[in-house]
Image (tube, rainbow, N blue to C red; front, side):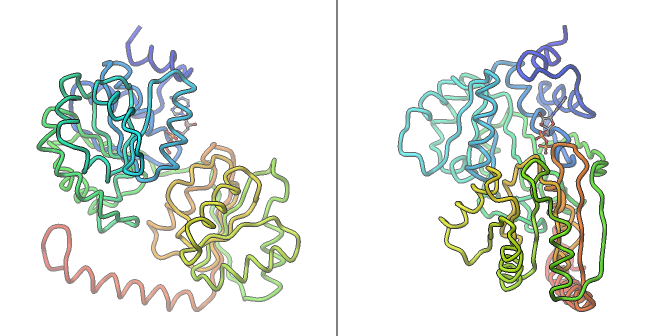
Amino acid sequence: MDATLFVLKDYFGFMSFRPYQQEVIEKIIEKRDFFVVMATGSGKSLCYQVPPLVVKKTGIVVSPLISLMQDQVMALKQRGVKVEYLSSAQKDYTIQGKAERGQFDILFMTPEKACTIPTSFWSNLLKEGISLFAVDEAHCISEWGHDFRVEYKQLDKLRGVLLDVPYVGLTATATEKVRFDITNSLKMNNPYIVVGSFDRPNLFYGVKQFNRGQYFIDELVEEIPKEVANGSTIIYCTTIKDVEQIYKSIMNVGINAGMYHGQMDGKSREESHRLFVRDEKQVMVATIAFGMGIDKPNIRKVIHYGFPKNLESYYQESGRCGRDGIASACWLYYTRSDFSKGDYYAADLKSKNQKKNCYGVIA
Ligand code: ADP
C-alpha cells in the first residue's frame, strides 16, 4: 500500500484523501515548498500531519495560539502521534531537549518561540532530520491580511537556517496580494501553490435589513438554537457598546450567553471562550476580537449585527460556522447607516493602498 495512504488509515482512520491532500503531501515529501489555500474544514491540517509520519522525521508547525496548539496536541496524542508544543511561556526545558533529539513526530511552536529558540536547537534537530516547516494561519504574516501578527514577520530569519527543509504555508483566506506577500515573506523557493474551492456547501448565507429595537431582538432570539444539541451561535457586533447591549437583551429573555471584546481583561476573555467551547454558554456575543482559534465544530449560526469590515473578513468570520459539515446559517443584519460606514472603510483602505502596497508600487 502507498505509504501516505497507510498513514492516513493507520493513524487517522480515514479511507481516502480529500481533494488536494495527497498532492500536497507528496510534494512536501519530495521537499517542495508549498502554499495551500483551502477553505475552513477542508482538511488542511492533514497536509502537514501526514508527511512527518511517512518520512519519520520531525515536522515543525508554527501556530498562532497556545489554545489551538493544545487542542491539536491532545487530538494527535489520542491517535498515537508523538507530539508536543513549545511556547516562550514554558519554563520546563524537558520537551525542548527531547524535541532537539528528534523524539517527536510533530512539534508545534508559537512564532515567538520559533524565532527565539537558540540556533543550536535547529542544528541539533537538523542532524536528526526535519520533514517540514509549516506555518499555519499563514495570512498572519501579511500586513494586508486581516490578522497581522508582527512575530510572524520574523519567521523569514529561519529560512537561512532551515535551508533544505520544505516550507509549507497554510491559510483559509488569502487574496492574490496576500498570497504574494506570504510566499515572499517566508522566502519560499518556487512554491507549488494550491488554491482549493472556497465554497462551503453546508453554509446558508442570508442578508436582512433591520431597525434597532425590541422587534429586532425578538427576531434575533428566534434565530438562536436553544438546545445544546442544536449547536451554538456567535453574534458579531461592530462596537463594544453593541456587544453589551445585545448581550443584556438576550440574557433578559433567558438565553445563556457569554460576552467577548477587547476591553475585557485577559482572564475574563479566556473564561468566556472556555465556557463557549465547552457548550456551557450557547451564544457568544462578541466583537471581532473573538477571532482566531475558534476551532469549534458545532457552531450552527454566525450572525453579524452590522456590516463586517470587508468581504475577506466576512468570509473568515462567518466561516467559523459549520466546521463539522452540518447545515448551518450565516445571517448578516444591516441598517442603512452601514453603507456610510462601508464607504468610510473603503476610503481608508484606498488611502493606505496609495501609501504602500506589497509590490512596492504607488497605486
Ligand atoms: P482545516 O484545517 O482546513 O480547517 P481540518 O484539518 O481541521 O480543516 O479538517 C476538518 C475536518 O475534516 C476534521 O474533522 C478532519 O478530521 C476531517 N478530515 C480531514 N481530512 C479528511 C479525510 N481525508 N477524510 C475524512 N475526514 C477528513
